[in-house]
Length: 256
Image (cartoon, rainbow, N blue to C red):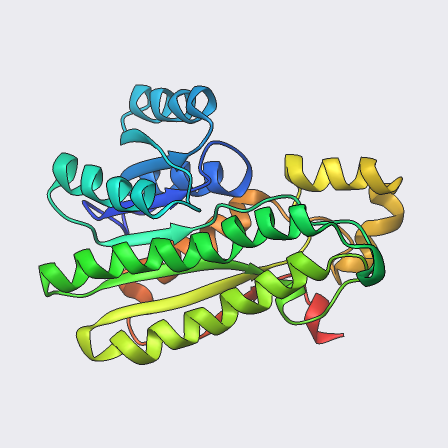
């Protein structure tokens, strides 16, 4: 049972067509939120919306490329046109990590990953915060980072840099807009069982039984719903005194 801790809150979730974003959108709807499922994949995103609405939730889809300012501005505008306001957002959209050492990293993929994983978060905050300032009654934003934003991984220079950047940008936004009652926090996720992780395991020739204990004190991968729970708490009024901080949803990985 999910308690209605987000009752009638209007929320945006980027990258919500699959994985952690999808789990977050579904959980938010169960908790009473009006959910904007924002993603570049229209077919999968609309399927998530259709299922949420069929199960009694309230959601609609917006196609967005978070690396493009015009798309992000339109995402927020369509949210307000549909629901009248914006109360919270989870900036989750991200690309698969890169896979080369520093001396061999791919410049084109660096640019693409940075445009989504870091610039996309910055643009999302820009237009979300503008709307919250216009409303004048605060709001809550969650940026999805990673354990890679605290402990570097080999062969991931772009991803590690971007996730460090997400943590830093979260703190800057919290400093600048706390006086406006806009809270900005991040969730540093650990190894979460998503299509992205499964693809990485296959790409690097790794298996769950061997790899999970290296990334988790609980000896298992996390579930997308477990990250969604952290985001839900940060968006809700239950976390009303938190801003500028990071929840490490990583099964103790960064505490080793």
